[in-house]
Image (cartoon, rainbow, N blue to C red; front, side, top):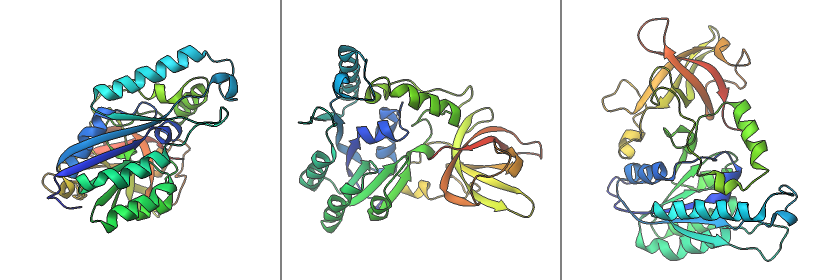
Length: 303
């Protein structure tokens, strides 16, 4: 990314967020993230939503109240407009299948991005790859923010990729059991409307002792069974800060926390460590080894 970028565009795939771990996303935090890391001003913010199916034709929501679902969806879209997003709604000609927002996003990516030199896309859909490549051929930098189930082809086609789970206060903190219960409950109502729910906040601020955060394991000694988690403490101010991974450096937005393999909720790491592809959720406490932080109750937060 170019630190001289001044013109930014944001495209948000709401159905992807709703279906892939983004319930409760803070869209105001997303807006500030793009401004801060992109190092410029947003020229437009587009959010794409599929109109909710009639519950009588949706097998996952049979018995739901049609008016209640429609009202919640409308209130959610109104809240987005209040934050400055321009909302586009896709409608399906088939009563049994929701409309796809991807064709609408793809067309707008190609036709609107001549006004900017950096585009941010919140999605994981591989069908956006062709549009991304067209933008890049025209000199537009493409940045992708993903959650669960991000297409490798979309991730690899981007100039820059960032997991939304790593951004402080962007996605509500919830452990695996709570997330499973939330997802089961979401089948009974409109998922996109539930995106506007408030965060499940920790008692302490993100990154401080007593809080629960997300990060990646950047070091692990398999012989001795210990390692370190790295996590963001705040939204980076520009791309230079985002890449300042060493927490010892001045102005680094990162911290590290010690952990032992026994600190995982299952008693052992679920994957081979270290791994920068697996994001973990964990509690932060004062280390019993001296100054610093310690990670405990560690669970993977991505599926």
